[in-house]
Length: 244
Image 1 (cartoon, rainbow, N blue to C red):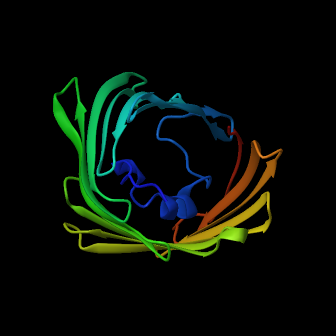
Image 2 (spheres, rainbow, N blue to C red):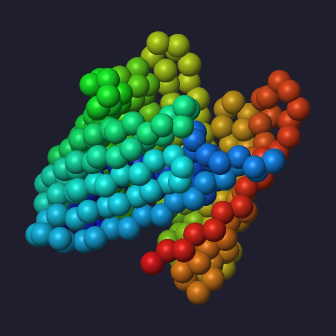
C-alpha cells in the first residue's frame, strides 16, 4: 500500500470503478451519426519528472482535454490542472482546477475547486474525506457548492477473482432527495470481467469485458431505465481500450 494519501480525484475510486466505469456513459459533448453516439479518448502519465512530481495528460474527443501536474509526498497530494471543456455551442472554454489532499494512506481530507476563466467564476467546489483499509474503503464528499452529499463504500470480497461490491448514496440538501446505487463485479476467468448495478430510480445496467493479451479490452454494456415514463428501450454500448 502506498504511503501517500494520493490525489483528491482518487477519493472513492474503487467504488466509482465498480459502479460507473465502462458502462453506457456518454460524455455531454459527443459525435452523433444515425443511431450512434460516440467519442474517443486517450491519456498518458509521466512518473517522476522531478522528485515527487508527475504529469497526466488526458483528452476526450470531442469533449475535453487537460494537462495536470501532481505533487505527492508522504502526507499531501496537490494537483494543478488547466484544460479545455467543450460546451453545447461547439466552442471550448479554458478551465483551471486546483485540489489538495492531506493525510495518510489510511485517512485523508481534501478539497477541489475549478475556475471558469472566461467568466472568472468558480464552477465547481467540492470537499471530502476518504478512509482506506484492507477490509473497507469509504469516502464522503460534498458537491454542487456543498448542496449534494455523496457517500461511497467499497469492499473487495476476493482479490483473486476481482470480486467486489460497492454502494453510493447521494443526497440533495436543497431538494431533500436521496438516491442509492449498488453494484458488484466478478471475474469468471482472469480476462473476463462481469459487472452489474442498479439504482433506486429504476436504472439497471450490466457489462461484460474481455481482455486480450493483457493490453486490449473489449466491453459490451447495456442499460435499461425501468423508471422511464416513455418506452423502456435498452441502451447498448461497445467500447475498446488499449492499456499499457
